[in-house]
Structures are given as structure tokens and as C-alpha cells.
Amino acid sequence: MNRYFNPLDHLIAGVDKAVRVVAGVATASRPNPAAHAADAALTDAEKRHAAGLMRVNHVGEVCAQALYDSQARFARSPEIRAQLERASREEEDHLAWCAQRLHELGSQPSLLNPLWYAGAYAIGSVAAHLGDARSLGFVSETERQVENHLNGHLDKLPPQDDKSRAIVRQMRDDEIEHGQAARDLGGLDAPLPVRMAMQAMAKVMTGTAYYL
Image 1 (cartoon, one colour):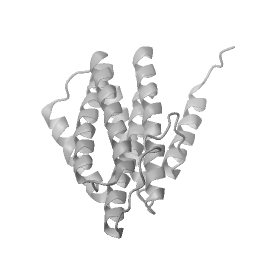
Image 2 (spheres, rainbow, N blue to C red):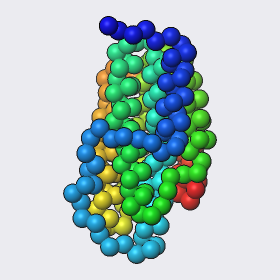
Image 3 (cartoon, rainbow, N blue to C red):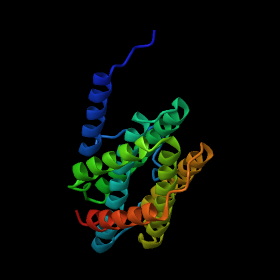
Image 4 (cartoon, rainbow, N blue to C red):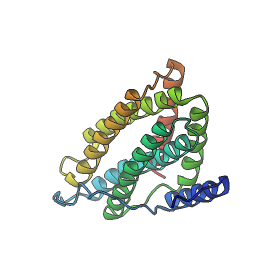
């Protein structure tokens, strides 16, 4: 028997999800890709640098949860909503993997996670209200920029940090798939001013999250 969820049910579920994400409570549905990677010796400076990069990645996944959840909530098509929810579940794997790696590196997630989540949820809601095609285009552009960002992290991580690298590589591969799925469902290219604004906001976020 299917249960009917009224708007209050959805609101409570959304608040519960937001609290868990901001608090760092995430459960991976897939094995951690770093599980079989060698635990290399890192200097204190290398650990701090790797932790800064993985904290940035963790913030990206906090934002991804907010974006996908808000866009799925306001999606018009059941097919598109299902794809956004599926991508959100895979992004939660990333969130859990990054949190675990931060712990292993002796660090913690960003202190500004509540701010990142709230801002991303608002942006996702606006994108969703522009229509499914525009919303999917926003997903596609977001994933394209994240892919470039993760490729940059593969260059910046300590060469011997195989655990962090394994996580980042799997994240990148998943982001490529999510972006392609959005395009396949009819996502429109984001206008140039929107792409530039997204890049500017990403620079602020990554520059801050590396330290906080």
C-alpha cells in the first residue's frame, strides 16, 4: 500500500535531510573506492594540504545534496525527479567518502556548512522554477565545472596520497555521468552570464572552504 505524503511530510523530510547533511551524517551505499588503496606516509604539510582539498570536495557534496534535493522537489516531470533523486543518492556516497577521508587526515568538515547548504538550496529552487529544461541545464553546467575542479585536485593532491586520489577519481566519473544524464533528458545550455556567475561563486566557496 502506497503512503500519501502531504506537503508537511515533505517539509519534515527535507528539514531532516538538511540537518543530517550539515551535521555530517551520511551513509554510503557503495564501497569506499579508497578502501584498498595504500595508506601512504604524508608529512604534516601534505596532510594539511590534502585535508584542505578534501574539505573543499566535502563542501561541494554538501551543496550537491542541497541542489539536487531542491531541484527534485520542484521538478515538473516524474522522470526528471527520479533522475535527480538517483544522482543525489550517489552524491551522498561522495559526502560519506570525503567525511571519512577528512577524519583519516585528522581534520574536519567546513564550519560554514549550514551557509553552503542554505545558499545552494536557494539556488537550486530558483533553477527548478525556471522549468525542467533550464534546471537540467544548470545540473549539466554544474557537473562540468565540478569535473574540471576535480581534475585540478588530482594535480594538486600529494602524488603518494592514493586514498584521496581514489575517491576524487570516482567522484569525477560519477559527475560526468550525472551531467550526461541531464543533457540526455533535455537540459539546455546555461547562458554565458550564468556560467560566469557560477564560476565566480565556486571560487569564493573553494577559497574559503580550504581553510574553514
